Length: 294
Ligand SMILES: [Zn+2]
Ligand SMILES: [Zn+2]
Image 1 (cartoon, rainbow, N blue to C red):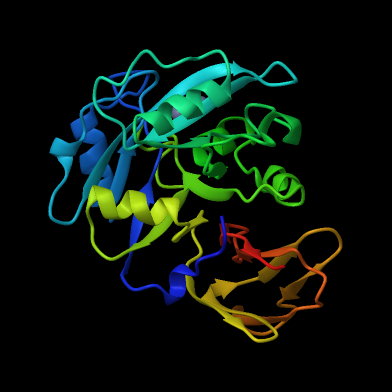
Image 2: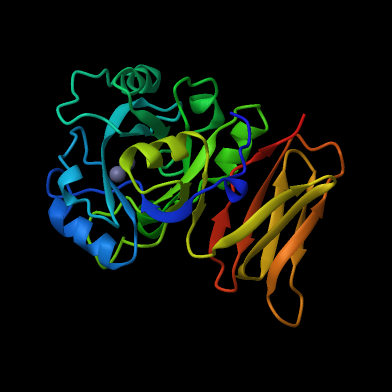
């Protein structure tokens, strides 16, 4: 995975929730109801990812709304004994017979069926880098799982992500709700996807290419690579962090006066990667994909 800048790619930005449950597993709302709620809330993309089964979802799509088919698979245990969950998207209804004893076998089965797979809620699952280093057919991790955040305050996995990136794993990150009941665990974590059109194929391709970023609220308007660094523009922020490997990186901090709406990072030259993190006045964050150097 190399960094392809979605901000300089052609297309439009679409708002997505890539992880949701319905009455087809342990959710409280039917698939149709979940789709209606997200569409009314201004989302363009919803992935229905019930436990262990691909719920038919494409029928809930509309001209301004794509409903992706996928699932969430419990797959083996982590080093600490936590349960490993893998999300698969773009899978056929009826997808079954996949192995569940090891995440690698599950990810391989998802890829063989034409889907894309990523690791759900690493913090909630008590995963450590050892659990995720070297996984193949793994696009990345959930950096924000809103349901896990408001359930037990283990929904933000940015440290897990850095732990993987510093070890050379070029994982992407995604923002999701993992909602089970509307009104409580909906609309707190999302992925912005840049794609040339609003179709399942275009959205899945954009996700595979990393043409997306994750957020709990802040919007990144632009991100530019310059000869000597990175420039970013965003909704008003208390901090704009340039998070890098080891002790590289920098925080643009608003101390007084108006909130920040942009920042410029000058590379020190030793960074192997830098990712942008926008923190608004309420403490909500947005996370760009990592930009790799060298
Ligand atoms: Zn899960
Ligand atoms: Zn889930």
